[in-house]
Length: 225
Image 1 (cartoon, rainbow, N blue to C red):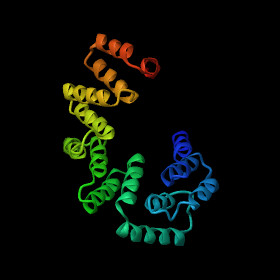
Image 2: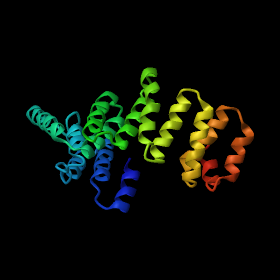
Image 3: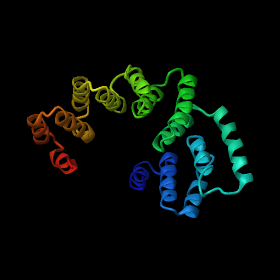
């Protein structure tokens, strides 16, 4: 988390989303006071106000009962008036920490107030496909299709590949991952996914061919267990 957040901060400056994940990484390392200081500069930022307050609630950053009750009340207040960006990033964070049902509440609301934001549909698809629940996984394909209506989106296409793989539709997964490679030829995760699909199908020759023909061949080899 720290490495990715720091790279993001180098590229995008003091972006509140990367600052939040930087603070979260510090907290997970046990540096409570440093995390609290880091969160201070973004705690009222509209983009990240929801997940910042949610992070404070159940953590060592906040042990005072009255403060917790105050934070909880403010969180509920902000949730009622939050815009689609705040709802999206809160849902994204909750998904990252495994709070699927709470994340779904935020994303469903985001989709509703945005009249069907493609980012919302795509994240909802990822929530469904990674939920581990068969009934939810079945719904993921439709979510990704909604997110792809305006053209190729790499996050949606990777999600759809994951959906087909979860449904054991390997031909559909390969077709989708080939679409990613055609449109984003230097996107390493797509090549890794394709190799894993070929290995699952026990197509050893194709796996070797992918590694040899890919512009990321050396990196692909390094990623293999």
